[in-house]
Length: 136
Image 1 (cartoon, helix red, strand yellow):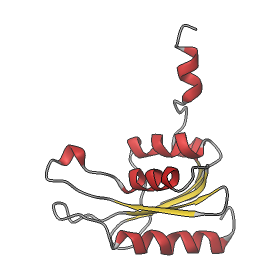
Image 2: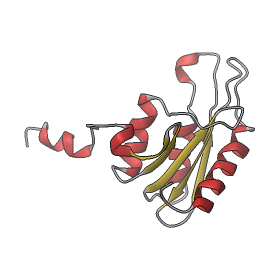
Image 3: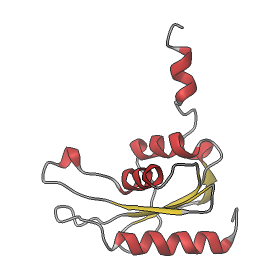
């Protein structure tokens, strides 16, 4: 496993803890996420459902919001878990959020072990792509 084992254990524990605070009255599918920031902080997020499903917030959205609300930085390690504390994969939208805030070097604990974002979201679209298409 890449990185410090105790980092991953701590992140799994934090994701499991915050998952218990998820607001999922409609689906019952609770998700918790935790990440290590490049300055050593840990940020967490949980899913928050809404009766209008389209405005439900993913755990990763909450985590990225917490990252910026607490000073910004870059994510270096990330994990998310389901209601049983099992590692799950972020959806495509959330993989894009993780790419934007961690980049290609972000390590993600996946159902197949720790993998870099370049494997979790190959050929990702990022800020540099906006520069190429701006016509400037």
